[in-house]
Image 1: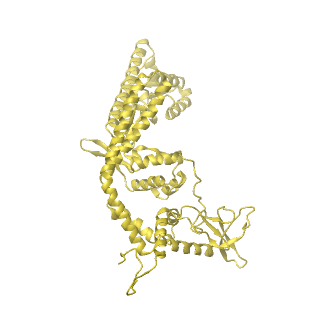
Image 2: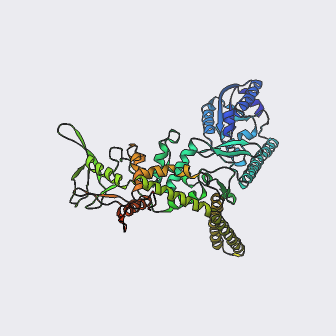
Image 3: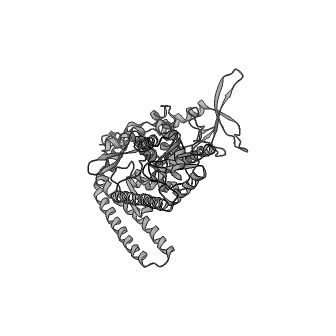
Length: 527
């Protein structure tokens, strides 16, 4: 009866489905399925009126393209219905629930299912065979998923990342290792600067990290969730793990963008009290906005442009705090920024002081190099001690009878494992510096020698960097007396103390005959 009814139908539709994006891109699945179905339609004498392609898992019954197919069938139901051709039963569904649910919907819409590899029917034997084929399809899907998960878990255990690539990395095939993550430039260097900047405090908030990244075309239109992932993924520190598969963090086979110590510092900063994001309206027109406060009330000065009667525009800083004696009293931008330039010139050390600072840095570098081996040994001992603590806690987990106590122990163990990883990495990195002294400290010495050079570049990010690296807190400005004595950061504070000591040194006078000895200089030992 079913076969006789099908012979009366002259039109059909084709339904093709794949579950992998790679099959869609390469055309291995959909096009080959359609070719087989069209050959079957020609053999049966059917006219193909429509083809439906779907990219979705076979265990899902709620499919967008399938809904379009059902709607198409309902339109032609009054004309006697249409034959629906599929390449194989597994292309229709790969699970009992999805298969029988879709079969009922297809029947209700007036569709008749056919396949070149399966004979469908309404009798008991055909239903039994169809049920067995559905069971086999479901078993193949579940078994394949188990095998894939097992292989991926083994890759993670060996330190590889078998999942989708993360921004800043790409998969590269290496002989004997398979696919390994490698740096993907220039995204890797951009992300590295963003992560290290947040860890060091250069970027105070996630919003600042996002704005920094969005300056580069490849990171346009980022979401807050994606920035959060950048800051919290251990893969950027060179480590892999999967808590869902009971795999704790372990050293990966790829090179991280940052160190694990830097990553842990980022996680600590994320848990700190949130700070206000840098304002978007701080433009190059008013570089000191947000950094200079009113000396009367302590509130930050705001800024604006004012147009005179002649149409000339003038730039002003002013205080808008109600109750302040300087409320709405403007300060010309040229005056305030000119006095700031004088402050920046005062904190700039002379050449002799810079030479002393460089010698101090070199001396500290040499001392640090001498202490590196001892420090590495200390880190190794602390890591070994932590691992012994972990073993004791594991014994307690086995003996614990309460689920809450076991979870507490597991949380403690996870924290100790991260500490041990950080210590191991410190021990490894302490043995040999990644870069020589001149390469690491060249820019720092140049900045200490003359921060004004960076300020006068005019770039807003450079000026923000000067303000943060030079001054430890906001500057306070009084309209009558100008800037109060600023509190500088540690390097400039030390250089200022050295300069004060140098200026206070007096010349000595000798005895019989009188000889004037020159003052002790910083670059030359006094006789």
